Image: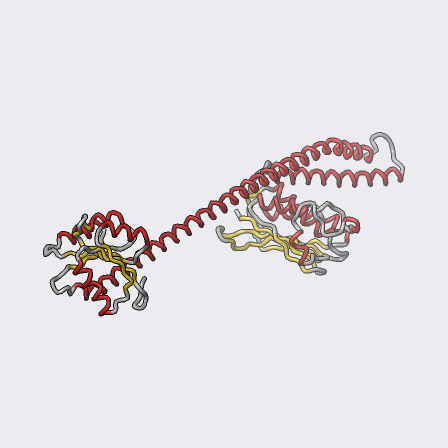
Length: 409
């Protein structure tokens, strides 16, 4: 865009010598900021446009070798203002349709030369605005092209990454299935010889084939304890693999909760007495409360929790099995079952690892407590299969409380 102090390059296309001189005089006397060239015909105009560029063209409509319409069809970049002396504006209208930016009507006193700077300034402003708009659209188009290319590159990388994730997930799922199948097969293979060891040990302890001396009884007792412990471990591993694979769906049935909890707790009284630990039973659940769940899986969970509570307790400590009614969103009432102990507790930094399978909080080479770290992981899986969630509260050195909630009824 040109301002008031910058020189405007003007090409005057005029075949009338008098009008040419009038234009020059107007520029000189009014000090128009024009740097101009004059062409007396279309041919000269073409030659001038071939030599240099102009900011604006002032062209008379009728020329000796044609009309300004021919110039308009050839020159699309430089704005053209048509000058016509015809009384009828038809020629100006035709020129505007052909692409002229504006027109000036010549008059006898040549007053059109006084308004010429206004028309030129207006045309140049419009042309500058059009260029800015065109530049904007070109920059916008370039920006869109660049961003589209960037997005295409990002999408390609995302597709590659997604394919890698999918491949990794498939490989992980295959590895998990392979691991689970291996564990199930190995557990199954262990079952038969272990059952034989346990069975024949019990037969020998029953002295069906003759009396035993004291040393033989002690050896058989140690053998029976080890075999039973290994048998239980094998069963837990097999059950964990089944639950992990989703092939052991719960078999719910209705049963009396108090009766179930009482019989479960009674099964641990001898071991608790041998360790010098008190077993307690608390709860506010009515005696006739029925619960619909899988009693076999629920008993496995409670056996693991009670066994851990005894194992990690102290002499003269206590283990409490409690059931109470609680409100849970989605159920009018639910039952919370918990096992609390007064044992060694769990450090806060160890809680995140507590339910991971085959993980123990003790260092393997400095173990004080037996086990492979599967009981709590299995319990967590089983509780989730029953529609609950196993949680823990613990204070290191003072004891722990494991609890889960199941729907009542």
